Every structure is written in C-alpha cells, then in structure tokens.
Image (cartoon, rainbow, N blue to C red; front, side):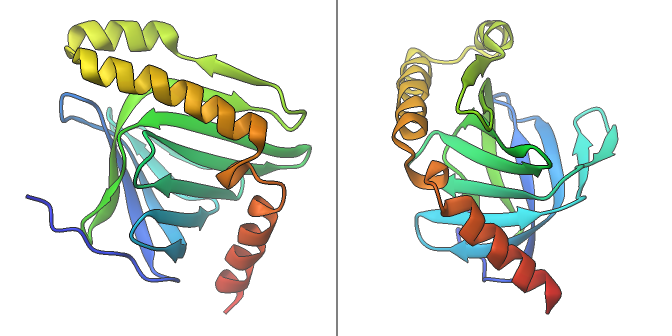
Length: 180
C-alpha cells in the first residue's frame, strides 16, 4: 500500500506516468512544487528532462505549470509559448504522491486547448486500442468518458487551471521561487 504524503512548497519532485498495465509511460525529472494540499498539487518546470518508456530522453522546450486534483480523472499542463498559453490535458487516474514522485495512470485520451480557446480531443484511436489490449473495465471507460465531459465544462467555464488569472499568478510564483 502506498503511504501518501504532501510535498512541500519549493520542493523538487519527479512526475511518473504509468499505463493501466503497470508499466512506466513517462517520467519528468524535476517539477517545483508551488502549492500542495490534501486535494491539489500545482507545480512548475522549465527545460526539464523527460524519459519515455523506451528510454528515449528529451527536454521540455518552455516553462510549464502542472495541475493535479485528487478527485479529477485528469491533469493539466499549461505551456507558456511566445504566442500564448497552450494546455495539454491528460485523462488519467487521480494522482498519488508517495514521497518519491507524483504518480498517475495515463489513459491515452487528451484534450489540447489553444490560446484562441479552441480545443480538440486527441488520441481516441490509441484509447480504443489500449482499452482492448489492457482490458479497461466498463467502470473505467464510463468514468473517463464522464471526465472528458467534465474537463470540457471546466475549459468552457474557465474553472480551475483554466481560470483567467490562474496561470499568470502561479507562473509568477514559479519565477519567484526559482530566483531565490
């Protein structure tokens, strides 16, 4: 059983994404914790090393914020690019933090939100393939489809990490923490 804890503000942690079958999917080496409570974690990173399941390595190109919620079956990455903020939303299990890393199961479906407000559901083919190969239960399938709708509502209503000031406030906090 995983003993959960809460990371401390300013602490640097890893993020580990798994697949439903328990195999590692992707690891982000360093994310600075900006806020952590019993129910949310907000972090920031920039030019962090990412290792894929096949051991391919790459470095993120821009500053990003990450948002995890204990009740949500999704997490959100806000990426700061020259032409605006892009959001990449992973449909995923709620996170756990065990003192080693923020961990979650990635369920393939993603929503990408552009600075102009348009968004698209991605990777439906991958979801269908993995659902069959890894035998996602009907309960998991139902939860994920419900959470796609919930995520779209959050985007349209500008809730949580999509709120107008959210990314700017937390990005400023990230910059302040990294200057000290």
